[in-house]
Length: 165
Image (cartoon, rainbow, N blue to C red; front, side):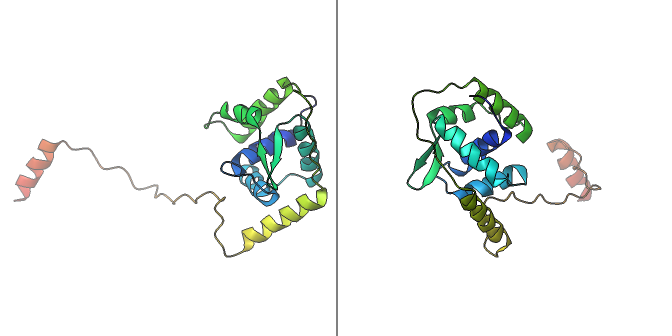
C-alpha cells in the first residue's frame, strides 16, 4: 500500500481499540483516537484514511459500525504492549507499506461532516457527568518520603515480640 500516512496507522490503532467486541461507530473511534494520542485527527485526513484502508479491504462496515478485517487484526496482534504509541504508529506504517491489494473491495466514504459531528459528540460526552470508560485511571499520588519497610525474617520478628513481653 502506497502512500502510507500517519492518519492510516492512527485509524487502525483506534479502530482496533474501539471495535474489540463489536463494530464501532464514529464516536467510539474518535474516543479511542483521543485516548491514544490525546488529540483527535483532522476529519478530512480521517475521511481519506477510511477511503484508503477500505479500498485495500482492511476496514469493513458491519451493521452500521466499522471493524477490522482478518489481515488488519493480524497486523495488530504483532504489536507489543510495551511499545509507545509513536513506535506502534511507525511499525504499522511499515506493515501497511508492505501490504498488497488482494481483490476488489468496496471503498467506504465517510463524510467530513459525519466525522466532525462524531468529534463534537465525543467532546460533549467528555464534559458530561456520565462516566466515560475510555479514560485512563488516574494514578494515586505517592509520598516520596514513604519507604518500604525493612525486611525481617520470621525468627527476628519472634525475637522482637519476646523482648516486648
